[in-house]
Image 1 (tube, each protein chain N blue to C red):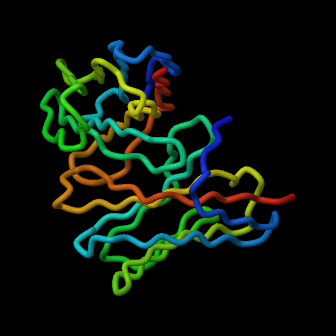
Image 2 (image 1 turned 90 degrees about the vertical axis):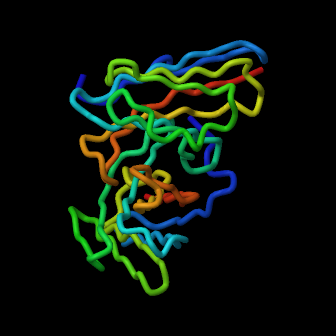
Image 3 (image 1 turned 30 degrees about the vertical axis):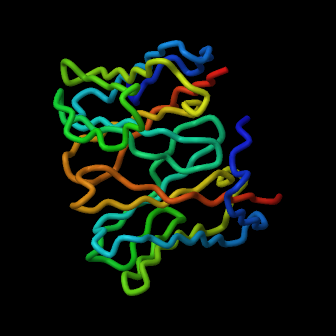
Length: 113
Length: 114
């Protein structure tokens, strides 16, 4: 598979533990945020999104937290499973960006069995 | 098909060759994006179409890169006179909406320039 992640931060967790992946964004005018999961050799896959009028949103086993004061976004994964191993990207959207999303650098999540 | 389809999945080109990468978005999706993803990095925006109109091409790295979507469906990204620094995965994404929202990505086309 791809040897991605030579320069990406890595989070290693034990199977069954909770994972927290963090992202700092740069544009205080960003009003839409999204987390993507990318497995080796595949395109990014949607996990969860949140708009700036919210500070928390929950999905199935995942929670996204948004702190606009410090421009910080986090993704919490409950009961992490081996299938969660991937690279995780946060992305932001803002009116000044038009319709495009601007992606962060990514974090590798490795789940140990 | 049910998802975004890209072809070819893998392309090896000699430096100086022209390449064309195809994207077939989800049927009915108005918005189409091309991103470039270098090894170990996040996707970088290249260009955006709303139907057949190319509304943003600010991310295209040089005039060797050209994209089109003539009938508002299938899109082609063309790279002329390829250089080694063009080696990357080229991702296509489509969206049903025209404001920032979920993008549905294809598997990407991996270009290697020798």
